[in-house]
Length: 230
Image (cartoon, rainbow, N blue to C red; front, side, top):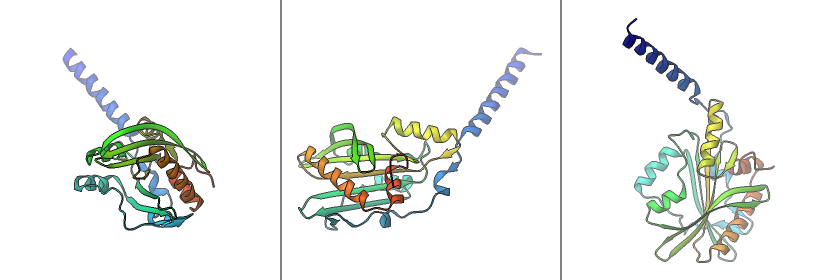
C-alpha cells in the first residue's frame, strides 16, 4: 500500500474520531430548561428592613455597545437603587443568563466599568458573610473623576457560588462532563462613597437584610444551592 495513501487514511480516521469525541463531549442540555421559571423583578423585594427603592437614582447605565452585549448574554436583568432611613444608598444590579456555555459568559464589572471610562483602582478577592453561609466575592473600587464607587459582586454558575474567572471556568467544565450547560447569575451591589471600608459594611448589611426578606427558593437562586440555606 502506498505510504502517502496509508498516512491519509490514518489521518482521516483520527480526525473523524476526534470530531466524534468532541461532539459527544459537547454539552447540549440546558439546566435552565428543566428548572422552575422565575422573575427577577418579583423575586427581589422592593422594600425590606429599612430599605426602599429610590427611583430618582439610576445605577450605572451601559452604553449602546454594552446594551447589545447584555441582551445577548442575559435573559433577565434588574437594576435598582435603594435608600434607607439614614439616607444611605445602595445600587443593586442582577443579571441572569440561562446559557453559560463558553460563548456566552457572564460579563464582569471589571470589564464593563472600564469600558465606560472608569479606572479600576482596587481589586481583591474576599468573602461576604451572610446568614446563609459565606459567599466568595470580588471587591472593587471604580473611579471616574469625582465619582468613587466601591463594588461587591459575586457569581453563581449552576447551583454554586464561585469566584469569578477560573472558578467560573471550572464549574462550567464540571457541568460539561455531564453533558449539561449551566445557567449563571451575577449579583452586584455598589455605593458612591469615598470610604470604601464603610461602603463594604453598608453593602454587607444591605445584602443580609435583602436575603432575609426573600423566599428560600429566591435565596438559593442568588446564592447557589450549595451555599444557600432555607
